[in-house]
Length: 144
Image (cartoon, rainbow, N blue to C red):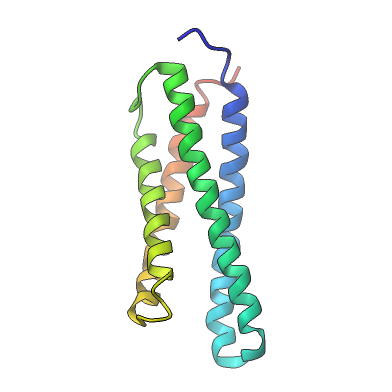
């Protein structure tokens, strides 16, 4: 393809990834807060839970944005996908975020879903580390 440079797309991806990691930390903090407040300060629970849900939606949107950027940018630059293990790491992150959302949506009716949600997010930490590392190596190819 004879397309212009995709450096602007990689910059959006870098900012989105940084924001995703920041939101993930916010989810960790608010999730811990929900756990603590549920047994100590019930008056704060609904507010903190709402913040946690909003952050969860934000990380879902950011991860889907990153998936779209990765597909469009890679197809535009190379004409095909799968040039590094970053694709697999990214698909793992997307899958884990979707699984986490699915588990979270069941917490109110199925108590075991809370443990599943927490476990998925523990694995998501490792997947975020993998996709960050692999993404860094991929983006280095395009920086001047």
